[in-house]
Amino acid sequence: MARVTQMTDRSLSLVPVRTRTAALSDCVLRGAVAAGFGLSVLTVLVMLLWISSPYPDSGLGGALHVAAALWLLAHGTELTRQDTLSGVPAPLGVVPILLVVLPVWLVQRAAHDALDPANGRPGPSSRGALCAVTGGYLLVAVAVALYAAGGTLPAEPLSALWHLPLAVGAAAAAGVWRARGCPGGPLPRPVRWILPKGARAALARPGMPDTLRAAAAGVMVLTGGGALLVGGALVWHAGAAQQSFLQLTGAWSGRFTVLLLAVSLVPNAAVWGASYALGPGFVLGTGTTVTPLAVTGNTVLPHFPLLTAVPGEGRGSPLGWAVAAVPLAAGVVLGWFVVRGGEKAGPIPLGGTVLSAVSAAVGCAAAMTGLAALAGGPLGTGSLASFGPVWWRTGAAALVWTVGTGLLVALVRRWRVLRRNRPAAPVPQAAGEPEWHDSGARVARWAALRAASAGLKARIPQPGDQPADQAGDQPSNQSGDQADGCAAADQGDADAAANNDGARGEDGEDGDGPAVVQPGPDRTDGADGPDGPDGPGSTEVQDGTDGTDGTSSPGSDNDVPAAVPAVPVTAPAPPAPPETGAEAGPRAEPGAGPGIGSAWPPMSYTDGD
Image (cartoon, rainbow, N blue to C red; front, side, top):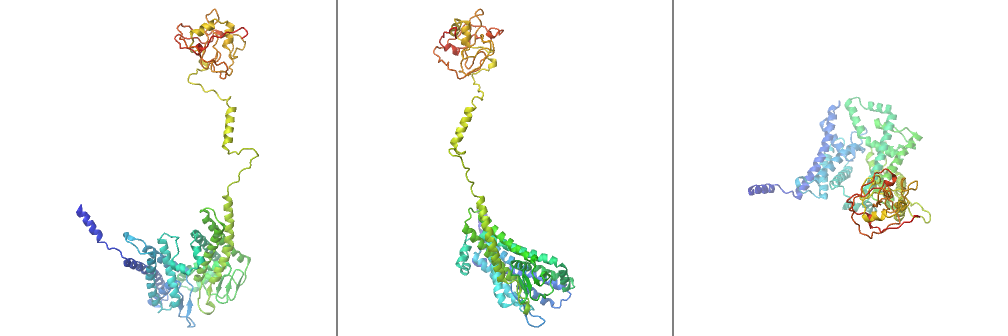
């Protein structure tokens, strides 16, 4: 066991410890690999098109130079076209936005993976990973720019000097931010140096993620609406678009190339449509402006399928003015998302709602400004020196629309949310009337209901009680003193004593009829015994019996406390047959215990009773 542990310890010690230099070197390598992978994808695509082209007169070197130039163009770098008809180099600055997606995704993925601690080894710091990945990517970019300088589409040095670091650094920062779990802590020091104090305070707010989400929603509505406008215009001018597509080239490889170029420019067309809906529109050269109100200038355009969607020259129509629904919808969605994010956190303050709406509008305008600057650019010299939306006009129009509409929608939605969450007003009560929810009032009502329903409730029989229909069949207990006292009384007096509580028969004789039960005590005088000739009367006294049927009669005033101790009965008394009503009372049984009546003192009765 000790040997196994020693071997395990030695094997663990052979694993090299990752130093800071090794971690940074790994990040640099990841950035270089990301750049090489993106360049390889474009190179393979260009080589396929070159091989399938019927006129491959540029040779393999020319195809590779075109691939390198397209890779630089995908990062926003402006190119220079050398082989023009006039011999004067012409700039090429319209960047296909779809080509930008691949390099940006590769850079942020490399930065994200660089911070993943593989095999338990420590990784680099966030700042170190950002700088190392960006540096490794830019090393490959410099080599590609130098190689593309010898072709027909070299990169503009000044444009490459600031476009490449900006695009790569932003993508790497996004990857580092995702790797750290998208924290919302303090801003990095370089960002704090660049931004003014007011912008730093706005970005450090707790509800900033919701504000950014609202701004992104506004940008999506604007660009989506612009894409719908362009698609509708292409369908409206479907014949012209088809003719332009077929006139460019007759080879299938050339048409496939045109199709790929048109697809890569679809996001650009969506931004153009959004700028058109916002109001400033776009320019098609130095003298042509396209807006919803009018199309001015000479609209002679090159043959390209997407350009056939441009409206004709002249004043705008009411159908063209309807495009204002796109920025209106963007402002509504922005204001809705602003209040939707703050609604979950609790009460929505008025100042916070206004600040969030304005901040979201500023973010939306900033994003549209960047997209407009990326979607447009020069296509040559002279009349084609400016092509696409003007970035600062697009940004200003987006700010006006989203602030005006979004702020109004946010305030209205906040008012509705507060109104819905407002507690209900109490129901007014009459003067002197207690509240319905008052516990004292409820208790008083329930007490009154119980008191009113007391006479309707049946009495619950106790364990010592006997059923009324079985009272005459069961033997009763009596004492000798009770029998002697009752035998000395007159028969009529005994009948009156048996119904002391007023329970008599219907004919008023000796209790022949059915007994009427009245409320009384749980003790009544016993029923009449047999008449004088048949034997001494036996008065039955049972607990809880009344009259001849033995039912209970609570509430009587004749309760007399027991004063004489009970005497056991020794003489048996056989029960009489129940032929008559006077003999219906139960008889005492030999050996029965003392009855309650044995404790009563002898009572005298008169004929008047």
